[in-house]
Length: 108
Image 1 (cartoon, rainbow, N blue to C red):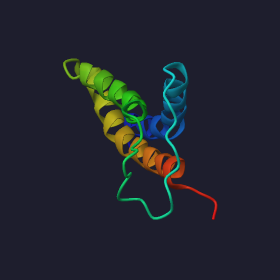
Image 2 (image 1 turned 120 degrees about the vertical axis):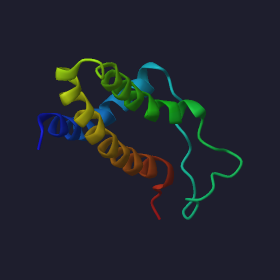
Image 3 (image 1 turned 90 degrees about the horizontal axis):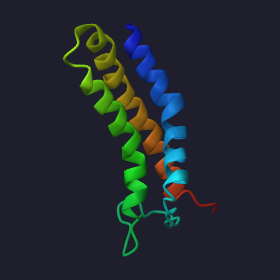
Image 4 (image 1 turned 135 degrees about the vertical axis):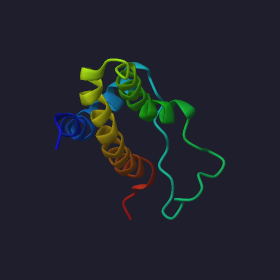
């Protein structure tokens, strides 16, 4: 396993969520309300604000943009492309878990 893959997995697992939390804090992103049990398919008339979704996408876009900037330089490309390819699925899993907890977890 290459160093880029290991770094991407670690970056996605340990650094993505803190980056999102900092993004939400410093850009004053409004927190969405909790949706009722069983509403996984519809947010109804009150969806989460766009800034909330941007705060989850922003850190991932920054990592992908930094990875794409290295495509022209071969030594960096051999590290950065595996890093990005490992980071994205790990960050997606972290985002899926925490977004579902934030939006849909209610004590019964």
